Amino acid sequence: MDLHDYKDVAENYDRYLDVMYGNGQDNHEGFREFYYELAKQYGDGGVVDVACGTGAVLLYLAERGIMADGTDLSEEMCKVADAKARKMGLSLNIYPADMTKFDSGRKYSLAIIARSGFMHLPTQQLQKDALRNLREQLLPGGILTLNTFDPWPPMQAQQMQTTPDDYSFRLEYVNADGNREKIYNAITYNPYTQQMYGNWKFEEYNEAGEVIATRIRPLLMRQTNRHEMFLLAELCGFEVLDIYRGYRGDKEDLNDPSTAALYRSNLIWILRRKD
Ligand SMILES: C[S@@+](CC[C@H](N)C(=O)[O-])C[C@H]1O[C@@H](n2cnc3c(N)ncnc32)[C@H](O)[C@@H]1O
Image (tube, rainbow, N blue to C red; front, side, top):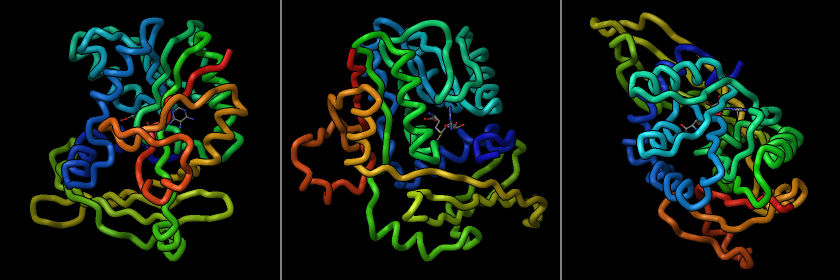
């Protein structure tokens, strides 16, 4: 079980993300609009939101007339996305599926893995499995977009000193039961596997300020560097069309690796299926 598989995480996800990204820590700012523009540009043959979570992108697109399918490994995330869609009067195809294997029986011209979904694949083998499978779910010339947070060595060096229960305070929010909750996390980094792993701790309080529950939820992710991603894309039958640094539309120069030192950021890859 990983963080997003837990019912309590899925049910509170939108609430704590709103606070997390409202705190000026938002390297996803503008993501919905970005995917809407991509969907208008590439989505004519059908769109699938892979690792759709609670539907942040899926529902935004649907509200604007783009009826995408949604899949996520976590049943709990799918349930939340589905309930939100129904409440909005939308009938969407949202179902649990692993991106390394899913096959809905239809093909798409655009597959979106929004925010850090791709980074939740913990090994290079699973990344290859996902890329190869997603390629098969695309029409010829179809587009896959995914994100990587470009590794930044000083940050990884710091995380190498952190143990999985060396918690830092992240935020406070009000949970779905109306109780105040504090979130702490501890992230450690293994340079050999390129995995970031650790725990998120949710501490729930009553009105008297007493802790009434503590939930520890594990999280495992993998860092992929820029050069590795180019090779993975090529190996799995994609060409790199563009890389954006963040969702504001700043493009990277694909031919200038010296700009890598500037990255430290959220890279959004636009990959095209080679026929
Ligand atoms: C950071 S969340 C992003 C959710 C959503 N895309 C968004 O922008 O709000 C990552 C999601 O990836 C899902 N996930 C992790 N591994 C997956 C896999 N192998 N196949 C499909 N989804 C996966 C998790 O369940 C989680 O909902």
